[in-house]
Amino acid sequence: MTGVTMRGKNVWYAGYTARMDAWRANRTGHRKAGWRTCGKAGQRGAEEMGPPNGFAMLPWLLMGMGAFSNLLQGKTPNPWIGGLGLLVFNSLYISVVFRAFNKEAREAPATRRLLVAMTAVTCGLAIGYGGSWLLFFPLLGLAVGSVVRGRRLGPTVLGLSALAGVIAGVRDGWGAVNVAYGTFISGMVTAAILALSETVRELRDTRQELARTAVEKERLRFSRDLHDLLGHTLSVIVVKSEAARRLAPRDMDAAIIQITDIESVGRQALTEIREAVTGYREGSLATELDRARSALTAAGIEPVVRQSGPPLEPQTAALLGWVVREAVTNAVRHSGAARCEIALEGTPERVRLTVADDGRGAEAVPVSSGGTGLKGLSERLSVSGGSLEAGPSQRGGFRVRAELPVDEVRQQREQQGAEPVQVE
Image 1 (cartoon, helix red, strand yellow):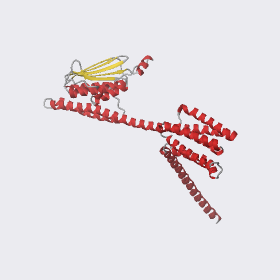
Image 2 (tube, one colour):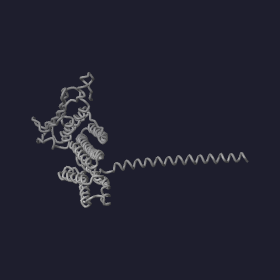
Image 3 (tube, helix red, strand yellow):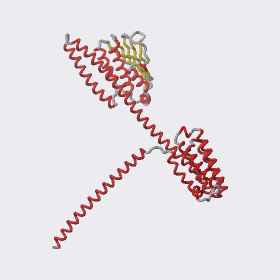
Image 4 (cartoon, one colour):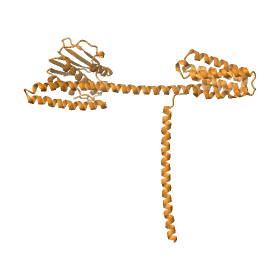
């Protein structure tokens, strides 16, 4: 029996221990979840908490309860004058602190006049009654700290503290030190807290504005890239489709080659659109020149490409690749030319790309008000310190000229003896 009893107790104890462990684990989990919930709620509450306003300054009026109590108990001589002064002071204080949170109202001359009137009332009450009425000087310091900003804050608060100290010294002796110190601290601390609050609010507004600007820039980038990509690709597909249609009755093999090129261009366009969506597309100048030769040839335009100068940095080559793409697309679509020249000339300081055709030409149009493609190119180049000119050529036809400064990175690398970056 004893063995059976001991085994029963052991089993009961093991079950009890297991239940207690599970209860502790469950309790710990709920506590941690509660902490996380409270933390998130506190963070959300701090984010949703608005800026301070005049209501946050009203509780400090309780500092005048001593004077109000003396007034009710009949301990104040001339109670009607004291009551009127208390009413005027509270009215001026409320008016000033509510105007302090509006920049235009805070800087208005009327606010300064209210402060002067409030100072006169405070001095009158302090000189006439003393005692607990001297505590209106720290309240006056709060009002001054909520309104005055910049370099005028220090001299104003120091002057007010000295005035409070002199008047309190006459009425209360050594207690004047506490009144002057309280006036100074209330003015400076209030000004510091409100200035910090305004800075935080401005930073928050700036962050929101930067977020909106980033979204707008991303939308502009996407629309510009999509225009340049689809405009060029669709033009090439149309031109090669027309070539395949003309060649099919006479030379089926040549037509099949054109159809194969159309398939290749379409697949490449899908890849480029995906890259444009993710924002990681970087064009290659060599690739764009090869595509330009193919598109011009298919359109019946003789391509002439000339290159000279040192190798280009990847960023410079990518920008010039966009220029080649847009200029050749315009030539294929609108020029009706028989010949198109693409000239790339580089120097240690600048690089120049010129795309000119001998087609019908166009009226001189400012780049800023030209087509979406030319406007987008102008914006791309201006960000990198370059420029873009587009208009009729002196020899007839249309010409697009882009200039870019050579990257300082490459110049520094060459000065240090490093190998320049090669671009395919």
